Image 1 (tube, protein in one colour):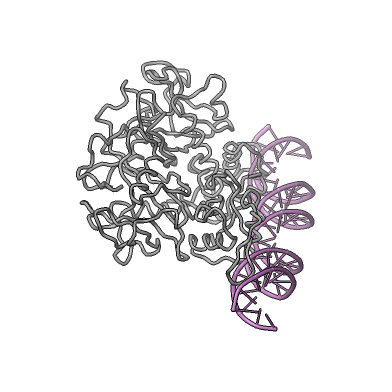
Image 2 (tube, rainbow over the protein chains, first blue to last red):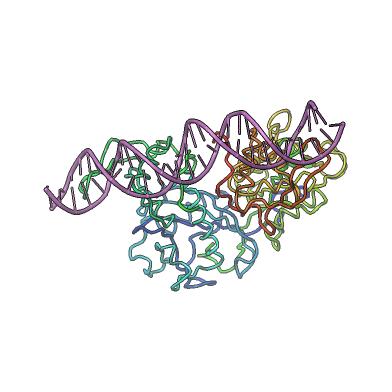
Length: 249
Length: 249
DNA sequence: CCAAAAGTGTTAATCATACACCCATGA
DNA sequence: TCATGGGTGTATGATTAACACTTTTGG
């Protein structure tokens, strides 16, 4: 940013309210779900919205996203956080111009321990819960502000990045089986994948999975080998070559 | 964005200066070049920087980017404009916290008619000119603020999107030959491509090019057919399937 | 032994690469 | 007719998709 006509940073005429919104996605019950809060205040009181809040001048955008998420869920979020895009300042909030920096969090379902009671819980805090992405927009699950757009962009980003990055592992625990990883791809893409070709594909892609040597036990069928992402790797930064391909697209 | 603890939009404690920066790229002389201005004011007086400026409360982010570019170059920019990512508010400007929404513009070299005199021109306005991306960072071409990071992110985005979108056409005029299009890929990726396979690839990819029926004349060799992007198509939105693949990656 | 899930082998079709070759123009 | 670049044909190796088959556990 250049400041051709000013010598101080905040000429107050040029400042705007800046918020972060978080599209927090997880895979639960074989479906892609998003974390939503029920608004207690106007505007859109009673409607569902993405968690978020104001950015403080002394924190980074990522820190603001993590802080807001921690305030809503009571737990510091684990998983993969990345910036999605920025919306505004017009046509977003009936009260006036607001710039909002949307973030995308991909996390295992148990990484965000929600307040007890589930989506319908009341109390003095905003009710927070997981909602299947496929159902948002219908059956009374309309979102406040422009959050339907933000959610759509976030889901689209997640779907695209599964192909060429190791992001799918962000939905799993530290160790996982190939079948669990496949369930992530199937839930996010809404497809079914051939288990045998998928297995060969992901285990054969360099830089993706490392065997831990351990196996599962107890379930039906042959025990599965446990894998993890290459240590110290950022799942969003690992470039899969060749990519895991999405059928049909 | 939710506002759990306020009923007015801008509680002034939570507002920040918001700017737009633009990574304007073009292909000139077989190289990828970026539009830079020479700063006339502190901080970083005399250094090169990306064009940009403050976002007004009554304009969209894209409008702000277009307006700033028009103010710097004197011409409303044509070409493809998209949002890149948002930086800040910490560690960017020595004067204090600033949020900057970076944009990416891909345009033909003649779409931005620069003030006469070229990169070294003086005068009372900031000097503006095209600089080869490969040379920025060396030979006295250091960028102000965190603009080196922004430029790197913009170039990376452009390189990635050439593969699976029709964005390369944004660097060309309204009508272009396959060889001109290939020159764009070669300049942006820094590779050489087989002209024959490239020709088959791009002409055979559905939804990419449409023949105009016209041909070039005057140059050496056989005249080339002129193509254009499918009418009314946003080059950034066209999904190429199969993609034009970058060798080696 | 049977069911169930994990994991391997094999094959046919598809796609990228390399490059031989032909086409259409200016000089 | 030659040089120059535009454009097509074709063979080869790599990769995917489909699916038969083997392995390893629990009941």
